[in-house]
Image 1: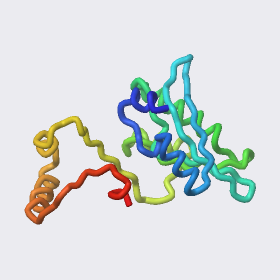
Image 2 (image 1 turned 180 degrees about the horizontal axis):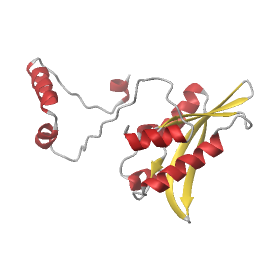
Image 3 (image 1 turned 135 degrees about the vertical axis):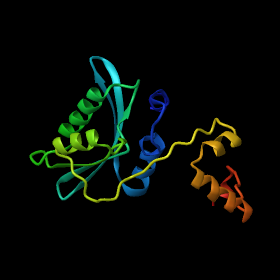
Image 4 (image 1 turned 120 degrees about the vertical axis):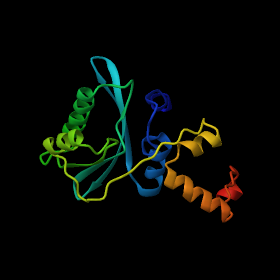
Length: 171
């Protein structure tokens, strides 16, 4: 699983093995993980959280699926349709709750509306990617000017970053 996520380049914490295990242990979700292939080539992997309530299966996909090898938009949409068909349906007594890792643009919004998805809340998710292989100076230079200014003010006010990995610090 980890190898697939590394191959994808950009993935999501909520599609990691550890996240699925944590949701299972803390909230009782059943975790299902799958590899989606088109013409024998793995195009995506997905972690689905599943719960049964009153005879209905609730399937939840958080920030997935994760696409491998930069597949094209047509393949991405095919994967989404296949997931929808498998994980939802009134006759199947299945509901799919889906928070995809897609940009909120016209093409994607139209696709999701055409395929029967709708947004319950006007609030949207936002993600940020930080390349931690860069040095501190380059990271600072890459920040939007507003963020750089806020960082400078915070540093003048005594902002400190402490990095630890021991159990005592975690507690």
